[in-house]
Amino acid sequence: MNSNEIREKILKLKEEKKAIILAHYYQIPEIQDIADFVGDSLNLAQKAKETEAEMILFCGVHFMGETAKILNPNKKVIIPDLNAGCSLADSCKYNEFKKFKEQYPDHLVISYINCSAEIKTLSDIICTSGNAIQIVESLPKDQKIIFAPDKNLGGYINRLSGRNMVLWNGSCEVHELLTPEYVSKIKAESPDAILVAHPECNDSVLQLADFVGSTQAMIKHISNSENKHFLVATESGIVHKLKQDNPDKIFTIVTPNEGLVCNDCRHMKLNTMAKVLDSLENERYEIELSEYLISAAAKPINKMLDISKQLGILK
Ligand code: 13P
Ligand code: SF4
Image (cartoon, rainbow, N blue to C red):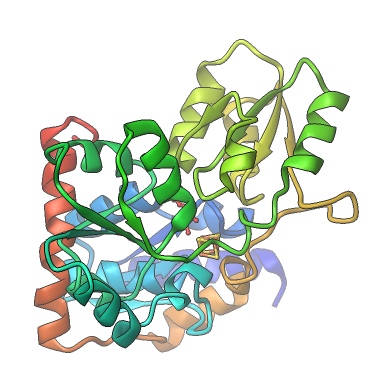
């Protein structure tokens, strides 16, 4: 089957099965193009909660499929590849995190959405990079907080807010590899370019950035900017949307070194059009979670969605 035939088959099956395809901006362009909705983690969580479709095909990574299932316990949620994990979610295992949490009995737990359903059950509020600062700042200044699993996002919030949240030692293997040495070098080579960076990057890289924000925030910032050239310190999938919205602007994805031409998340890029078709045809791979996991993990996710609406971050 050629790529056009695969695409047509996916679109036909999607209608027949009354399925919705949700995709993260880190998916390959072909998948973004057939999706009903493309977004960052926050917008995707909201969309997953609101959809009336009978089946959700989530093109992203495993924890995103889990979140969709937690928000839609009665719907079938499928993902194209069960091996699409996440270094942040993998860094934070239930038993270790439970012990860690026990050392700080008077702390609230704010967890980045990039964690397993089990970790969500140990959390008081979930956040994404699109609302993390506002969620933390919605709590009293003297509230003690554990932030997990991303030490870079947590460290960035500590720096901005002057708080001293206890951080779990996890990181995103894609953003973590970017170095201030190489970023400074490419900045020096393009002095007119604006550097935008995702807060999963190291603080030393973030300190060099002209703008720091979630995937959606970077997309908005670039569209609103008069500048022509942008150095983009995040996963390369974002460029598809950036080019669609800003055909006249130039984007240089910041890589860890000269040798790499892209900055791909190996987990996100496991999904292919052939796997999307297989997933829809065979209704696999289904996300299955116990009733307990669903109800316990839903509480901190819903808290995040409610606070985001109250603060006007989500409509
Ligand atoms: P956002 O979608 O919140 O920007 O997070 C990026 C990411 O790494 C998703 O896995
Ligand atoms: Fe996880 Fe990083 Fe990949 Fe996002 S880009 S899924 S945080 S490993």
